Amino acid sequence: MDERTAAFELIRMVNEYRVSQAISVAATLGIADHIKDGKRSATELASLTDTHPRALYRLMRALAAAGLFHEGEDELFSLTPLGGALRSDAEYSAAPWAAFVGRPYYRQAWSELLYSIQTGKNAFHHTHGKGVWEYRAEHPEESAIFDRAMAANSRGAAAAILAAYDFSPFPIIMDVGGGQGSLLAEVLAATPGSRGILFDQPHVVVRAASVMAAKGVADRCEIVGGDFFAALPARADAVLLKWILHDWDDETNVAILKNCRRAIHDGGKLLVFEAVLAPPNQGANAKFSDLNMLVAPDGQERTAEEFKSLLAKGGFEVTEIVEAGPRISIVEGRPA
Ligand SMILES: C[S@@+](CC[C@H](N)C(=O)[O-])C[C@H]1O[C@@H](n2cnc3c(N)ncnc32)[C@H](O)[C@@H]1O
Image (cartoon, rainbow, N blue to C red):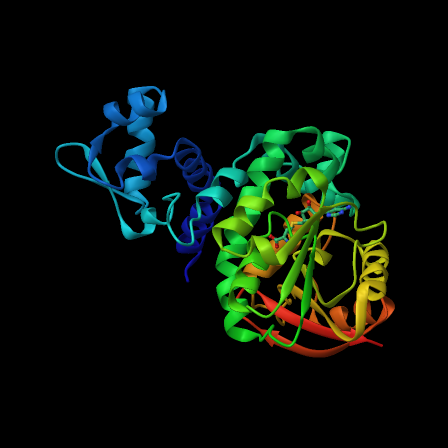
């Protein structure tokens, strides 16, 4: 690549934040839902979304140029297959995540990445004076937006996880920090002989009953609100930790893992679902997620060796690491 091409390419990459924020706004406004059944003009869409017609037209034409929508000669907009993933009824809707990523409080933390790189400290705390979980507990709307994003992403991940791992040996499965229960609902639906316990913060699990009911597993799942740094509510044959360990540093994780250890029946398993960092020059997604962990929740992504060492400190021996897709691996452990 010559220098001029490299400069153009870098500038294109640097400007991608605009695409990201524009998609987030379209997701927040529910644009894809408004055009899924037929074309509409920006003026119609502006009236449906209570926005400024000309400004919305400019958003729509930019996103059409980026491939999410198609703008006809008549200035009517329709959905492309890419933009279709922003429909709220899409099986693996990207809209909840897109809406979350554009939230100002979260972007503000990312704008302090330089602070994190200079100090090694958490940008979110620097920006807001508290950690992400405390902030969301105090801002119910932000918590709801974040929880919806996690639930939607978990539905997508669940398909890959179920294809890669058999949960049927476990009579009782407890998802610790399981959010609104997306993963556990899918696991229980695929494992009719098992019962589940969903455990997360009280203000998060309040929205879980409808998720369980929608999957027809409500009668096999107990929903418990609490704090995973205190005791876990029950004992189980499998304890799931999905996208939990990457939120915290090693020392904090050891406290969570020790609680999980006490909650696992003899012969039971700990199942950690996380991205595993790839060797140098590969796996950009997990490596940028690692930066996100530095900026937002104050955690980190880990290599396979780092997971083995961390689980050992928490009382587990890693028995297997199964790649369930490009973005998620299953780290299976048994009590050591
Ligand atoms: C990154 S989200 C992952 C949610 C879910 N496991 C998933 O994969 O979609 C981390 C979860 O940890 C929960 N959490 C944070 N602190 C907690 C605590 N002290 N006790 C219980 N849950 C907590 C959050 O409410 C959130 O649902």
